[in-house]
Structure formats: C-alpha cells, structure tokens
Length: 146
Image 1 (cartoon, rainbow, N blue to C red):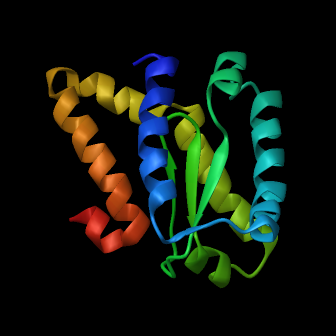
Image 2: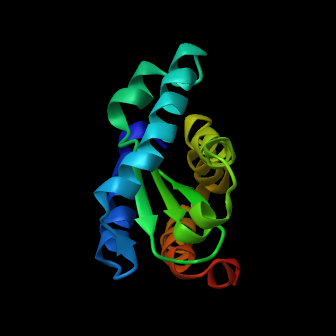
C-alpha cells in the first residue's frame, strides 16, 4: 500500500469520526495532548524512524473523544485517537506520552499498511473491517473487539 493510499484511507475514516457526536473540539485539551505528541514525532524523525515521505504525506493529527474508556488508537495516514478516559487515569504527562509513543510507532512502522499488504486478495474485506473497527473503537473498545 502506498503512503498516498494509506493517507486516503485514513482521511475517509477520520471524516466519519469527526462527525461523531463524541468528538471533542477543545482547544485547551488539544494543545495539552499536542504538547506531548509533537516532541515524540520530532524525536522519531531525529532517530530516523520517520522518513521525510511519511512526515510530508501523513496528517499527524489527534482526534479527541469523549469516551471514558482507557483507550488510544492509531489509524492509517497519521491519524490518532485519544479517549478522555485515558487522559483521566494517567498520573503524569509521561504516562500519556508513553501511550502516544506506542501509537506513533504503529504509524511510523506502517503496521496497518503491512497487514493490508499481507492480506492480498482479502484487502477489500479488510478495509471494510478496518473502517468499521475504527468507528466501533471510537464508541467502545468492547464493540471494536467484537
């Protein structure tokens, strides 16, 4: 899967998530999460884990969700989701940063793209399941597992 295709897939998924009533558009909370996330992206770049192509093509955007579950997730194309429940249970900025770093590694290592490439002819089914799973994860981790 090309980086362009991966970004387009992420764009489609994120458009749906932004329409979700649980999406939070809070400048203060977003600034707090971004203050942790952006240095992680920069560190990945310095360590060579983030290629110039990925840095340029991917969104590097975080979506905040009202969900009270302890959850964060990565989507194709450099999109990330963070639930309020996660922010509420961490004791320090470093704890939240470690979760963000984990999710960042999924994107820099292109885990979703590799999974889709390995699936070969099942790709259309996999893409549909991925989109449905992302929508379910935005609502409930239990629903996403189902």
